Structure formats: structure tokens, C-alpha cells
Image 1 (tube, helix red, strand yellow):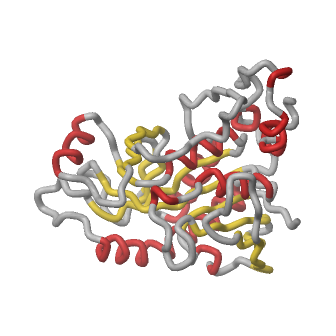
Image 2 (spheres, rainbow, N blue to C red):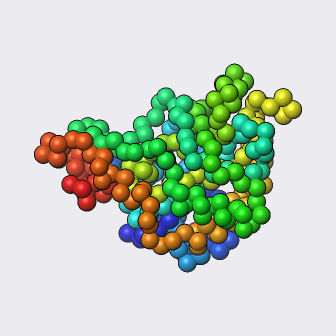
Image 3 (cartoon, rainbow, N blue to C red):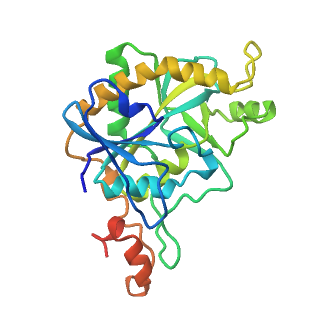
Length: 286
């Protein structure tokens, strides 16, 4: 199977960006079912990159229906060591304007229906998640925005809501009172699973609206989000190209050893089926 170094998860148009070469479609089987779509592998700025459409081509999958485990496992199977997630978010702050970029470094989970771990069924592990994104990837994205002259907010907290409906005004104002910065529907599970898979992860969040709290702006609509996403697509592609070529080849972050002290289960009692299912992720420890 063809391999990649860097994964990009986002909209289906990302793998058509200028500069990407030798693109081919790859279907990946996983123990957790089918990923959202085929992966598109290509060469971007001299690096092998795998692209995945989070909601499937044509946007067929709701945030709660995404098979996050299969998506992240598929990247791992392709050899990916770093994932850049591109996603739309609502702003919970006056100074985070639509068309700005944000690089959240913390997450707050408000989802209720999602599986966000590879573990269970006789195998228990507890990863550290106090710093849920990779500083190396965040820094590369931040420097890319600066080099391109694009407004970017490094740091802050991303509230991950269940969806698919947008927030009520009461919810939006509560999140603001808690000091949250942006709100979205997808990044939290991706970040957790990437950490369990020892894959570096960061979110490039494109601000599309002010959620529904802002008195001078209409409540968020799908038409508004799509309009800003279309306008921001070129910027996100430029950021990705710059960041991909600037990421170091070798990793020296803690992401690569996140499971070193995480496995709690007695090695002698781990079921054979669990070992087989997670061999790709845990093989070096078992």
C-alpha cells in the first residue's frame, strides 16, 4: 500500500489544490468499519500527503455519524504521523472575525453520542490529554498564516457540540461566559483518537460566523457558512502548502510516545482479539 507522511482531513476540494501532484485514490479497510471516503494520496511540496473528506464527497455524513475511529485508523495504516484538520467554526469572541483563522490548543467536549477511543473490550489505556494538539503542527500553521499575512488566533478553546443543529442563544452565551473561543462539531474526537494512535494533530479552524450570540449579526445559516468556506478555501490551501513543506521530517514531540505509559490492563490478560484489532497502534508495546 502506498504511504503518506502527513494527513489532511477536511472538505472534499482540498485534494484538488494547486501544486499537488500524482494524486491517486486509495480505499482503506479498518477493524472499525469504513472511513468517511477514500483517501487521496499525492505529493505536495515534496511531501507525501493523504487527504480525506470528513463528511464524504457530496457531504453525506452528519457530524454525529462520522466514523472517527475508522478515519484516524486509516491515516495510521497509511503511515501518517501528522494530521492537519481543516474545519469551519463559529466565533464566540468579538475579535475572532469571519474569515479569520484560529488554531485552538484546548477542547471542551459537549458531545453525547460519539465513540472517541480505540480502547475497550478487555483492553484499557488512559492517554494524557492535557495538551490535546501537537505544538509542532500548531507552530507550523501559525507561521504559515503570518508568512501569508492572514489573520490568525493561536491558542484558545474549541467547544465541540453534538449538532447537527446550531446553538441556541442560551447555549452560545453560556459558552462565552465560560471563556470559550470557537465552536464546532468535529475536532474533539479526531484529536483524542489521533493521540491514542500516537499521531500528531492540530486544527486549522476557519471562522465563518458569530454563532448566534452577536446582537449585530444574524444567526448562523448554512448558506452563510458555505459562502465563507468558499471564500476561505484558497487561503486554507495556501496555509497547507506552506505548513506541509515547513514541518520537520522527524518528530521530537511527545505525541509519538503517548501510549508508552498508558496501558493499564495486565498484558497477560489482554484478549487475543483486542491485540489483533489494535496491533497497528499497540504492536510496539505488546
